[in-house]
Image (cartoon, rainbow, N blue to C red; front, side, top):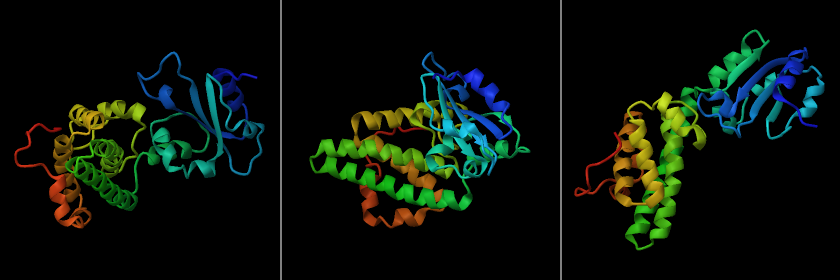
Length: 248
């Protein structure tokens, strides 16, 4: 049986166990909807209240995907769900505003959480850049290119963690940066540099980008992570004769 979005929303609104309906995905992002877009919907049930809708958790069709959960579980989203919830649209909130507050809070990492995450991601990013540059130096361009491509994920996770935000899914990265730029970064320049690094694995743009990241990380009190790399930092930093173009 195929369930239509509009009919399902009406049914859910009539169910007293439903305390929230939250739309996520492309239909929650202005300008991202295509003819292939479905409706991705969280159906949030009151805790310890039975509902026949619970059996529809995981329902998927070409037009509708459902996640049926409880308010208690919605308070504790998995890390991979955080961006989806942060940029979702609350269609129904019958929880005295708690569903709306959860959505708003999900888009902001706690200070301690962000600090720990950023430290680990900075080290992982530095490691990927170091391996890429070293592999190019040692005549292994394929490994260098793969390491360069791997560094991009750590980089983006890091930059968003430094701003205490969950990283957007790749589909929404340009959308997010266009509307909510990262402080200190020009979005187009950053995306162009990431695209070049992942496409070519070239060393020079990696080193120039690393210099920008190093400065930002030190300003955010992560100097200890960087200094632990000792003299290996010199391999990651730009060479004196490196061209000056870099993301703004």
